[in-house]
Every structure is written in C-alpha cells, then in structure tokens.
Image (tube, rainbow, N blue to C red; front, side):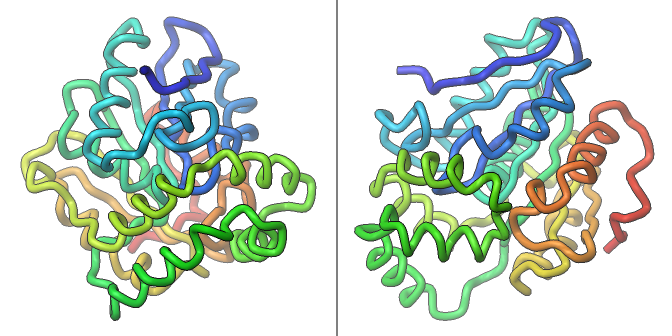
Amino acid sequence: MAIFVQESGPANAPAVVLLHGVGTSGWMWASQVAALATDMRVLVPDLPGHGRSNAQPWISIADTARQVAEVIASRVPAAEAHVVGLSLGGYMGACLAATSSDVVTGAVVSGVNILPFPNPGRMRLMGALIAPVMKWGPVLRANARALNVPADDMDGYQTAARATTRQAFRAVSGEALGFRLPAQAGSSPCPILAVAGENEHDLIKRSLAGIAAAFPKGEARLVPGVGHGWNGEKPGLFTAMVRARVTGDRLSGELVSV
C-alpha cells in the first residue's frame, strides 16, 4: 500500500516535498502549500501511521525515507526534489539527504536532535505512558500549547493528531531518542540546511553544528523568537526560507548563522 501524497502546483515546476512531524499529518503545511504551489510542484505525504496513511504501520525512519524517495522518483517528472522536514520530518529529511542524493537535490531540516538524551529509559517510559491517552482532549490541548499551535488551527491539529495511531506514536518516539545521522552523510553531495528555533530544546540547538559538519555541504541557522513548530508561528519566514533554498537565493537575515 502506497502512502497518501497530496500534490499541488505546476507539474513541471521545481519540486519540493514537505515532511510533517509525529502526531500530525500533511495538514500542518497548509500555509506553505498555498504560498509555494503558485510556481512549484509541492508534494505532501502523510507518513505511515499518520493522517490518510494511518492504515500503514510505522516501521522505521529508514524504511519511510525509502518510500519518500520512491514517491519522488515516480511522481516528479525530473525524478528529483528538495525535501523539507520539521521534527519527525526533519529526521526523515536528514536521512534522505544522506542516503538518497540521487533524487534529493537539497534538504532543510528543523527540530532534529543527534545528541544522546539524558535518561533515555525514562523518556521511553514516558512515551509508553502517554501513548494510551495521546488522543484525549486535555492531552491534545497541552501538546498544542507546547507547540504554539495558533487558535485558528486547533481544530485541524486535533483532527490530525487523532488520526495518528498509537503504534506509530510509540515507535517514532522511541526511534527518535536514538537517532544518529547515517554514515553516508560524510560523502553525500546533497546541500543541507539545519535550523532550529531559539526557544527549542537545548539538545536540538546544540545539534545544529553537528548536523552541518556531518555533510560536506552543510549549513546551520538559528531562528530568533520561535519554538519547535515555527512553520506555524512564522509561516511567511518559513516559506521564504524554503523558497530561497529551492531557487538558490540568499536566506533572510532573520536566520542567524551558527
């Protein structure tokens, strides 16, 4: 069964793939799709266990990266695209940049940690405890506040979150705790931009330099005044960043070099 993919924009335009975070779906990219699809081909997958792909079990980041690479090869006329990922989507984007440079011409990854977590066992236990109640209203509202989900987006956020399977939530949460960049990153020709919000977890901010250094064409930027889900906090700036990377233009001065 193929994952669900929303497609927008001119068929032969430069292509960009937007990869969502855990507990949501391609819905989270609505602002970016509306802005980018005017002159770009925009592909937005729902990853396994999420959204309209929730009948598929989550297997691993590597397996899902393979599926996304197949989407690019089969659905983009030029068989190549930029990938943009936030949170889980960022881990996916980093994996694709390292292992699938034949179809990925550039990557932007936000909210990715590659450093060891303190007390990973405790973190896994918390994930197991949260999974059974992850769709309850109070839990959803607390998560939405933590992610700074705008009030106008709450209904969409809750619908997307409730479509996520508990299996996917637990599997992704556990896998992300031990994520390390693939060894192929060191020889990948794919340009990658690692970004994080100023209000992100310290481990994610400290990972920026490591991600950039792992790729021959790696860069890192910090975004002042935002947190994890900053594509919703500053959608215009996020979209401008994506457009600049796809077109080769200069990044906004609001993105601070690391």
